[in-house]
Length: 443
Ligand code: GLC
Image (cartoon, rainbow, N blue to C red; front, side, top):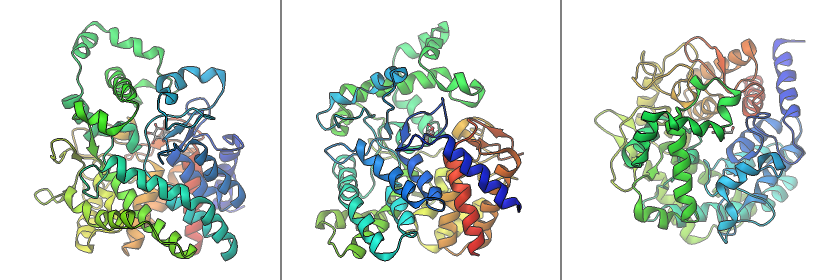
């Protein structure tokens, strides 16, 4: 068996192990539920082995769709064991939440359109049409919700109300804003008395992964407190915004949205349908809107605080994500590529670090504060290829495959020496390695 074949066998076994029939959980006990962007990445890999199963993975996401169009970042397992997880969110508080399943009240980067199209590529034309037609109404209503509920200033940029919505949970720009705009009076008191450690009672992650790789207890508690606040407003952004400055137009989320809109337009074209006029106007606005996140002084993209309209000049991998959006001018894309080659930025032995390696916020094995993640690599490599930076795309793809070959399908890896970390047998790592290997064969 050649080495790619061995790797593929391992990756397929991980997806089988995490298969819950309707969906694939990200990783055993640590992540037992269905996550929105995880299922999308998983389907992108699954399509190479079992296109029906890939379709099921995406269709099952629609179980969680709210009547207002929102797709939640998590649909909870109904097992008694997870009552506590469901109770944190209490989605039934909102009249828009579905009855049949429990979900969170927030979303995650809108990867669904990309996954629908990738799965569609594996189908014959007539089947593809049927596939698209079955997903189109839900997709349109999700994108409409994002504009209606999350773009109140009609700027073309959507805002996020919890760091979990970005999928990059503990990324430094969000932690910075959390400390500036969501610091209740009791936080310092709890920290000083060590009472903060009560949060361990509800933290699942540190039971499975070394605490040094995850968020500090105080940050985890504040994240929980943000959930409590937005839950009390029944997850309605307009009500949350009345009292909070903790709302961010996140660069990663919005870059993914721009690309998702392009896919939505392509799907509508194939189906011969007209996208609703207002949605189309918003889509056009969004293509230019990433410009609002460009900082001409440091020549980087940043997320922006929605309430203060200030760019959050804290380094992270988000700065590279407009490559994936595909809507930025080539000169801008070149500047981003230069960062990939720059020592102390993203030029590490195993790209791409989730925080520039020379930044003071960089932490080698801590979650979204330094390690390299295969899904982020997939997004960046995909964007690079579309801009014609094939050498850089190949480097990221080959390095990702090498990481998994060395250590297995871990959740994340040190960008410096490739040490594996986080959960083992992680689904999107397995799925996207299958996709990377398939791409390698095509070239
Ligand atoms: C972590 C990641 C998030 C992912 C989830 C399930 O919370 O930060 O992006 O969706 O795990 O894998």
